[in-house]
Image (cartoon, each protein chain N blue to C red):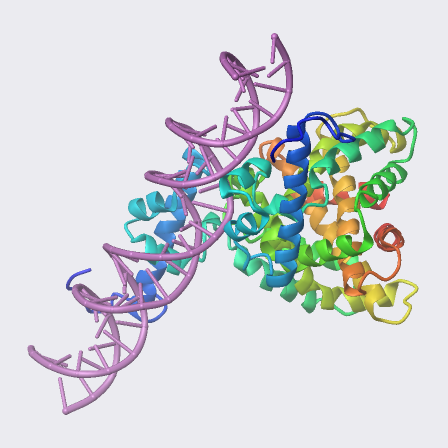
Length: 208
Length: 208
DNA sequence: CGCCCGTTTGGCAGTCACTGCCAAACTGCT
DNA sequence: AGCAGTTTGGCAGTGACTGCCAAACGGGCG
């Protein structure tokens, strides 16, 4: 705060950025702690701001809304998903590609414990669930242009158009649905086993 | 409102019930109208209440929240789903059963036009989408006990327990995902064609 | 017919998430 | 040190939603 303007850096660039990152982390940690302690709905944004040492207004500038305070790099999900799948060879099977995307997203979590806490919160809080599902749907839309061509190539492949559109949506949505089912089961088992294995199992059950 | 206490009945029972139903309809109609005219987010509950001729407080007593004002008998969805599927013979294939459930729910809409309006609103409004997806998930949970046994019977069927749980969830979620993909495509085509056909196409794309 | 009881309604105030707006504090550069 | 651009914090406002309490109303009773 005072003195010591010389950069004891090691961080990204300007002091602002470092402070910002620090505050951001503090807010996220405080939020996750309070959420797990009192529950999501019972925790007010004002309380998080107070305990994190920032004004409510600033908190809302850092994060768009209460839901974002769950953390877990949810904003990166979209980018990671499209990047991972986009980087795959064009003739990769759709399901293989989607599995790779799911795996990449799961790797984003810092620790198994935090992931478990987040998922538990997510699956037990209606409002959070709603928000997550909505975000998921957005990712799904973003993924569409990457999935459509692969689907057309593999399937008997009639032209493009609305028909392929619906099918691509269904395929991506199914992958996400399996991820959700898997993560629910994973939470039920208190984080025992590998989430990806559960995902495979779910997908197998669906695709018979 | 005044005089005419003699029952020109024909309705269910007491005057209260009839008034209630009338007000309910008025509110729902007003809401759908305003939503389509101005958009969901731009319409305030206060405005709906004013134009429907009830107090805001009463409106919230009739319907739990703004989302319910979309109507379409969403509350019955759960019941219809479980009843339809529950009434099917125990050895019915899971996918057949789920298809029947989906068909029953689709039959719930009064008119094609209203269904289209509702779906369009649903797919273009983030907040509504979120709410719908959350409700969908609740139906999914309700359906689980009906789906699990059929899945165990058909599939190689190891024991019961958490394993089947995840798979059942995945299967039901997939069916719903296909319904969503289908309804999105249906809206894109301005209600042309049969929704169920699109559903079948989506499911075929998934189960390849 | 009129009266009382239970239900329903409406208004009011309050909570909570979230958003502009504006002045004050601060950082980075010269 | 000083200037300019950015960030912050407080304040007021909106909109959904919830208790609370008094007033209005419908239905059954004498």
